[in-house]
Length: 222
Ligand SMILES: [Zn+2]
Image 1 (cartoon, rainbow, N blue to C red):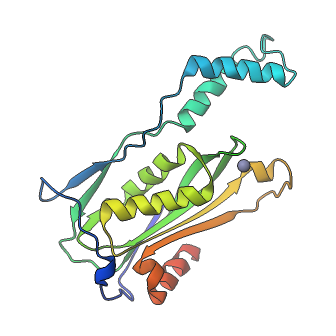
Image 2 (image 1 turned 60 degrees about the vertical axis):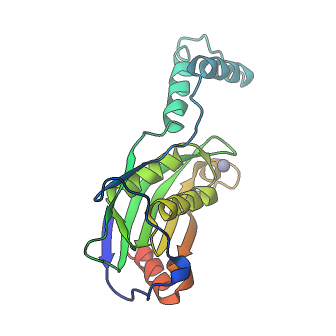
């Protein structure tokens, strides 16, 4: 994970894209908890279902080699679908920093909702601060939280951008995801190594051409 700070080409603030900062009791820090509303996984039911799936696939779930497989599969899926709670803590932008903040190469794994197979890759998140800034590690936690549900890459990208926009009230947000989908690499077209790139741009990162170009160029930089 790389964090990039840049002062170049900060656009003049546009009142149409100003958001109110979150309401605060504590004047210095605000912690907003990401509540996903995900139902809990029923592990015994998942184990039974994996046993049934093995039988339906012509396998013997009672054989010595597969005896523990339903338990392992159920707990693996439970882990991939259960977000770890965290607080999205923001701080006042006392330095009035108005350049682009970019966190690059945040690794993630999610589950494709069409095949229940993983897709994994990296996320790049940038924002233009207004009244609040955020601890950079919170972007990795945000990506992880939205990745731990059945997803398509397009929706995952938009949910991350929307969450950062709503919680931080920045002048602009950009999210780029690059991922390899096992449902593409392992079957069908067997497009091994091909990566899907999605982006969601909000506020000044969508509307200001120079800022948008700077963000996209920095996400491509290696
Ligand atoms: Zn798929």
